[in-house]
Image (cartoon, rainbow, N blue to C red):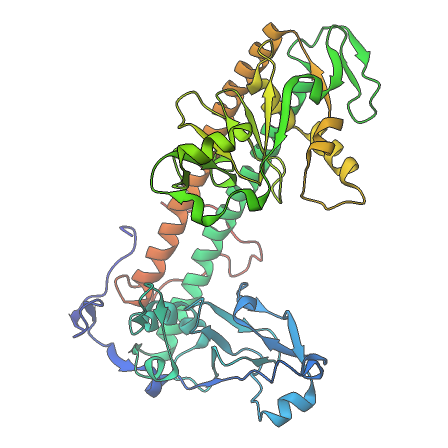
Length: 453
């Protein structure tokens, strides 16, 4: 914030978290400066209440800066019977339950539920300024429940501290923040797009490596499978089950019950470990007696574990240093023959080629669920073991490269989000003086996306 100047004179606000404010500002209350109304929810048991063309705003709708559509609508009759007040176009809607502090402008006339306070244009401060100031000021008045969540009600909002300053000055602060946050948001959007492209490219590189190999000059042959196309001539093409010495689904749910769990013993592994590929987390254990009884489901290093319900593509290899244990009903265990590299086949099973097979084989069944029957039908490519190792090592290098670029972009986003938050905070609390700021793009409709130093 060093490039912005401060106000000439400050005074103590008398509010601990706010500190000093410009000498011509004063601390007031929401109830004296910004009147608001609260909506209502018609009886939900009557479906007819929600058949109509009147927009009705829920907390989940408060996402964009301005909203012109809602997930639900209500009937004229429901609005009339509840004596609901219309939230006029241009009003500022503020969520004070669940997503506390979410704000959006009404892009047209609409109704709201009882968890949204609608600030009207009769406010003594511009709504454009309240858009930035309310989330910071009102939240300071919120109480905290036993779960650590912020809680607000209408009375707390009315008595929340709010800065009173000249209307034109507040309007200029809002215009300044509109311009500066738009630049930051544009840069964030570009970084998010970059991350999306990097992830797509990473997946494409991996899929190409496990289906075409690393040598661009190798002779190719038709795999005999339409969606797989050509593969290196010396590779075998077979079903995945022939790569494995066994494929076993987890035990029936009734085989593992809550009363079997003990503080220590043999670990029960499930999606909790496979999805993040972290086998140190989790605290479900069974006794040695139950482990022996369920030994068919014991998991060993090099076993490929496949999440089989709702998360196809989440696959991990059981590591050497993990605790002994068994799989739960939401996993399938594929034990790869010793002459193959399980890490290569983990990457192959996560490739686009296998996902297309899964989609085909699941047709008519339950999408998002894989079983042994489907897994047995998966067509696999089988390079020589030396190539399996080389391809896996190449994939690890590519993952490191792409993940480093993704992490760099994520760090840039975090820094920009922090700057955005700081800029808003400094402007609405008077820590910087932007009264003389002028929009450099006043005669230019395009937003300048160069972020100032």
